[in-house]
Amino acid sequence: MIRSIGISEFLLLPVILVLAVLPIITAVWVYRDATSRNNKDAAIWAVGSALAWPLVVIIYLIIRPGAQQNTP
Image 1: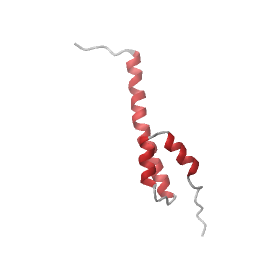
Image 2: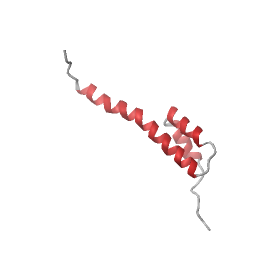
Image 3: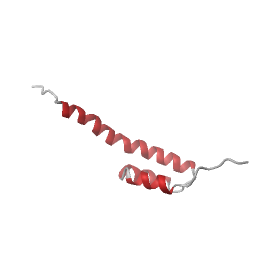
Image 4: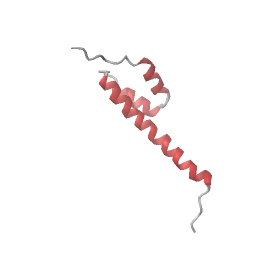
């Protein structure tokens, strides 16, 4: 027998998907940002941001070095 899905179950699925996908997206962004800033610990920051999101992402944003200047 097919069971109908209630509105609370229908809204729960997108929330679960966002909470599962958002840490992965931010981990990729943190890794790319850290490597572009020549951070030797880029992989550690990426794994940490995926596992302890959003805490590690916030810490990374606070302590990351400033934007690099491309001066000749």
